[in-house]
Structure formats: structure tokens, C-alpha cells
Amino acid sequence: MPKLKTKSGAKKRFKITASGLVKAGVAGKRHRLISHNGKYIRQQRGTKVLQPQDATKVKKNFLPYGL
Figure 1 (cartoon, rainbow, N blue to C red):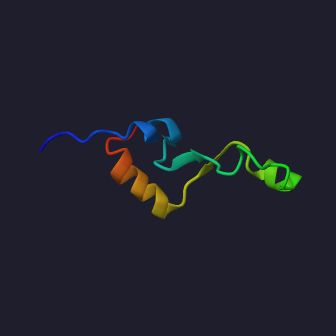
Figure 2 (figure 1 turned 180 degrees about the vertical axis):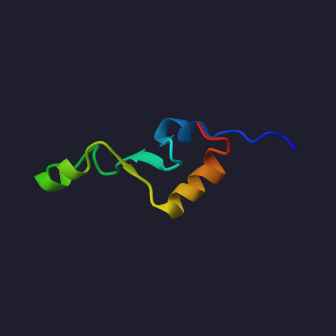
């Protein structure tokens, strides 16, 4: 079988933790921030851990060999 290629966009967007969880940046922080309140903006800081359903798709389809 040929080797699978890692999606280059996924390399830049996701990190896999030591315990196998997938971290990603939070959506909704680029523009239109005036219409959001301060609590929303604070909660969107940093990175979040993906839900198990999404993490499975990312690991299986985009990052077949991890990072």
C-alpha cells in the first residue's frame, strides 16, 4: 500500500496532545468582534480540545500518522 499524505492545511491548524487529544484554534476571533460581548471574546482565547467525533475525523482523514 502507498503511504498516505498528511493534509498540509491540517498540519498548520491542529496539534495532538501527549494523551492523544486534538487541539485546535477557536473559531470566531478574526473579525466582527464589536458585535460580540467581552465574555465571548475572553472565552475564545487560546485553543480548545476538539470533541471526540471531530477528533476522530481529523486523526483518521487528515493526520494519518500524527504530528
